[in-house]
Amino acid sequence: MASSKILVMDTRPLITLTTDFGLSDPFVGVMKGVIAGICPSANVIDITHGVKEFDVLEGALAIWQAWRYFPAGAIHTIVVDPGVGSSRLPVLCRMENAWFIAPDNGVLTLVERDVRRRGGSASYRSIENREYMLPAQSNTFHGRDIFAPAAAHLAAQVERGQVQSEAFGQKIECLIQLDVPEPVHSPDGSIEGVILKCDRFGNLLTNLASGDVPAARTNLAIELGSRRITRFCRYYAEAPKGELFAIMGSSGLLEIAVNQGSAEQQTAILAGTKFRLT
Image (cartoon, rainbow, N blue to C red; front, side):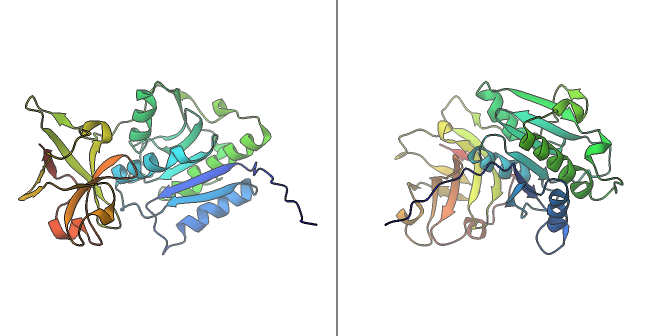
């Protein structure tokens, strides 16, 4: 007789981690150790620890690309924090069906912008309650001393079904916003965009979303530095190996890429470079 399998839903609280800590130092492991000591049942998932050091915009892009693919109630902990130890606030946010714990330095700008555009709900609190922190806090490692314990205490509340967000601290009205460039549409139909980042494969991610780019792309061109890119592809292998082309990436942003190569290396273009779509 064939054995039957019973599928059991994983009801453990879920915490994600997004940092610029890298993996060569013990910082990430220490944060996980703190979480395990407070809420050992928590399921901890790494989104990335490869955010460029101190690059708040890159951290904002990483969590914006990832958070919507996690189950409702996930607790997203983001520590890209060049202002650690300063007067910037640690915050607990509820946006749509997810929780976010992060420094209030703009790292949640893109998530909040998306939620607001869809008419979703958002609320914010500062993290002040020392019961949700380690007994002593350094001025250099709030990931360990404030953010990880706050995430773990929230996870324990989620697991009990008794979330008390008001116990973390005072309500705040708004978050600090990054100055993320928006596409500029000109009367002649052209669009000025900006390169936001380069990913691990050398693809250049732009600030143009699918709605900014005409559906019919046979007569479009991207003017990027001294280059003019006229090939728009549906998938990477559609372009000849080594050729520079444009593609709508999985994040919903227009990318400039090279099939089996690096657009970053081929163009020497850096984040912050402007381009024009005509």
